[in-house]
Every structure is written in structure tokens, then in C-alpha cells.
Amino acid sequence: MRTAEPRDDADGQHTAATRSEPAPARWPDITSVPAASRPRTAVTAALVRRALGRLPLRARFAGSGDVGLGGPLIEVRDPAAFHARVGTGGLVGFGESYMAGEWDAPDLVAALTVLATDAGGLIPAPLQRLRALWAPRHPHAERNTPDGSRANISRHYDLSNELFALFLDDTLSYSAAVFRGFPAHRDLFAAAQHRKIDRLLDLADVGAGTRLLEIGTGWGELALRAAARGAHVTSLTLSAEQRRLALERVRAAGLDDRVRVELRDYREARGTYDAVVSVEMIEAVGAEFWPVYFRALDQRLVPGGRLALQAITMPHERMLASRDTFTWIHKYVFPGGLIPSTRAIEETVRDHTALELAGRDGFGAHYAETLRLWRERFTERTDDVEALGFDAVFRRLWTFYLAYSEAGFRSGYLDVQQYLFTKGNPVAGGRS
Image 1 (tube, rainbow, N blue to C red):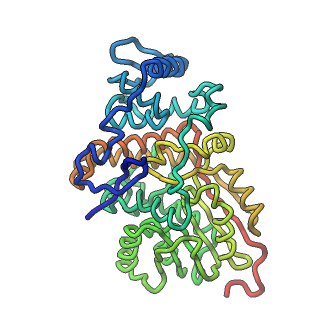
Image 2 (tube, rainbow, N blue to C red):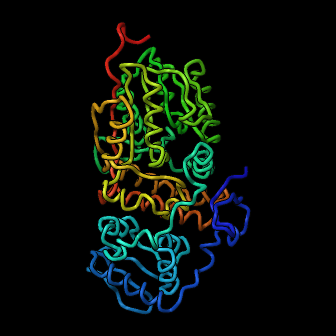
Image 3 (cartoon, rainbow, N blue to C red):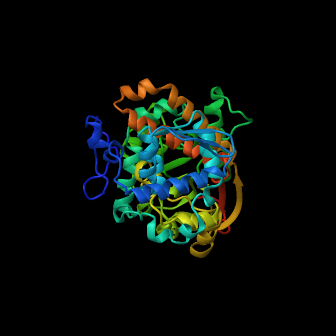
């Protein structure tokens, strides 16, 4: 099976590359170190040592002494390459340097948590004010237009159903679970995912006869659980691979008469529904299209309808500072993605829809535990990941992605919310 992984062509745009290609062709920005002048490298080295020197960690540069106030260890094995990458690519280069094996950390999450906690102060204030001049911008091709969204979603979610199955729990849920206590136990992972799903279905008042629209199918667990309650579910996805497996699971459960899974953009949704549920899909919409997204959901709901939304969020000021910047996550994991703030969500809904905020609940600590379990399972299944054809660079990429995300939640830089929005009063007689 041919599956797409990101690479850069001569114009800097991502193109599809098969897993059989040699590493230099698949990972051109990893297998070669960018050229950087000596003055630029020297300035970068000084800025990096200054930034790390005031943090509660230890940064050990080969051939020189440690810097930092003490704490989790970062080992820079190739300082010249590390500084060249950071000097030319900033935080994108920092991630690429990890992918190249030029630095490592015995406890990667702990080290990244320290960095995430101080994310707003790592770059000196004068450079922050000039961010628009030096920070890379999003490629125009990755705008979340209908065609752009399909391409962006495919690059991540169509990698391989088998890959995701290696580290997700048995429900194949790829979003934050809700645990009863910490540390979370992996034997209870599926139950924690069902708890999350049930909370959303309860918020949306999904039961027998409910007409439910799901935006973002995943691998179908929420649709299956809603249908088991007696709901009639229309679920939309842009991932052909996810749809294929979701349909298999629907058929296996004998719920074909209650669940439809359509390869369709949210802007192409039709009909009206008693409830809409969308789990961690807004992060793929983009700020430009947030009003379009929420208007589309509003239009699909009948009067009295309920929208249950699960969304990753970040502080509003950090979102504003970084929303136009092309990051390592964009380049290698989620092209076109943008994490909103709670303020951005609530103001967009207020200004562009008839929906009313009825409740919000944050549970970021649960996402940190979810990511820990995914990361540990991914690490344990390294041989199986390799057997699927994913090379060592890809495995370091995903290790970094999972650890980086976990650190975001452990530091409080990221959070996750379950929202309930309602649409006016129900029509006389209740559901039709």
C-alpha cells in the first residue's frame, strides 16, 4: 500500500513520497545540514546558551560545559549542526535536529515541558517584535479551502490505519480520554475513551431517534456508540483510509441501518439534525474559516438543537502571536492546523451564529495522560512500526510529536475543552 509522507521538493512544497524511497529523497531537510555563516551560527549559539542558561534544565553541548539551572538533561551531540539548523530554521530547525539525531534527552517529555512552560520567553523580546520578518509563513497551498483541507487531512490521517492501530487503544480513538484517576492505567484506556464519548453524547442529548451529525469520523467509535443508543448518525470525514475502516467497523457491528459515513467536507453537509458532535476537528479548520465552520454547524441544527464540541485550546495571546507562523508541527504532522483559544471559539460563535454557550469544561491533565499512553505504546511497538515500512527518521519524528504534545499539556500551554452550545428553544412537540 502506498502511503504519503511529507517531504520538500525543490520549490519547498510538500509532495507525496513512498516509504520505499531512500532517506535523502524522503527527508531532504534532515539528511543534509543547512548552510549557515559563521557569524550567524555564533550568534545562534550565544542566544541558545542564554535562553537555556536561565531554565531549570541541563543542556550539555559536546566539547563544552553544561548550561542551565539543573533539571532534565538535553544532550547536544553535534553542536555545529544543531546551531546551524536553529539559526536557519528556528523551532522548525530544533525539531529537525532531533529527527536527525543531533540532540536527545533521557526524559524527552520532561525537557520539552520545561521549554513549553517558558515558550513565550525563549525568543528575546526584540526578535519577538520582529517575528513577522523572520518567521516562516504558511504555504498558500495549505490554506484550508475544500481542496486544501482534503490534502492536509490526507497527509496525516491517510498514513496507515495499521500504524495508528499500533499505539491507539482498542476503540481507535485519537483524542483526549477522560480518566478516573492519575496515573492513568493502560488497561482502562478504552473505558476512559468511552467515558469521553459518553460525556459528549450526553451533552448533545443523544438517544433513541436522535438525528446526529458528526463532523470528523475518526475510525468510527463515536458513531458506533451513538448508534447503539438508537441514534441515526451521519458522519463526515475527509480521510479515505479512516472512512474505509470505519465502514468495516459499522458493518461488523450490524449498524449499517443507523450509520452513514460520507467522504465529505463540513461545508458540504446537508439536511438538519437534532444534534451535532465534533471532536478535535476545529484544529484543522484554520482561523480564516472558523466563521464558516460554526455557521455550517449552526445551519445544520434544528431549533433547540445542541452542539457538543471537543477542542484543543491555547492561551489567546500565544495564539495571536503564533497564528501566522509555519511551525515544525505544520511541516511534519498537521499541515494547515491551528489551535484556537477559548476566547476565539466563543467570540466566533457569538459573532457569526445563533448558537448560545451553555457550558465548557477543561481537562488538559487528561490529555497529558492520553498522550503518555500513546507515546509508550508507540515506543514499545517500534519493531512493528518499522515492519510497516516507516524508517528511523519517521519514528523519531513521531516520538518527538507525541512527547512535544504531551509536554504542551503538562506545562499548561495547551488545554482541551468540551463545549455545549444550544440553538434557541425547541419547536413545539420536541424532536421530529
